[in-house]
Image 1 (cartoon, rainbow, N blue to C red):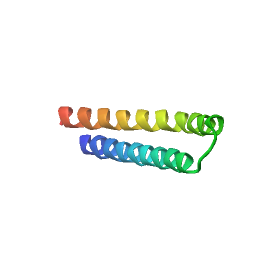
Image 2: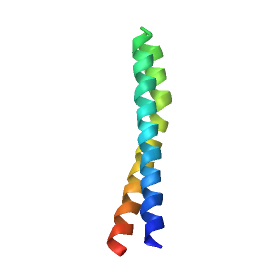
Image 3: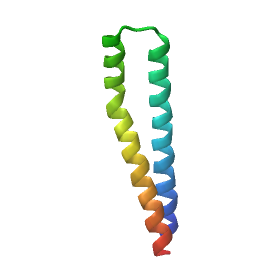
Amino acid sequence: MFDIIVWGGAALSMAGLIGLVWCILRVMKARKANLTDEELRAAVQGVLPWNLASLFLSVLGLMMVILGISFS
């Protein structure tokens, strides 16, 4: 049973990591587009909620992995 928690947590962590990489690529693309300061700020502010959600997902997944390992 705890194997499911460990593997589910690992999947959540990977989903969060993919989200973080997507956020990094999105901001890098905006920086290379030579936008004005206001446009760049708007692009970064648009990515910020996705970045925080990805971090939360990664932390939640890692917590699940730790709980699954410690309970098994």
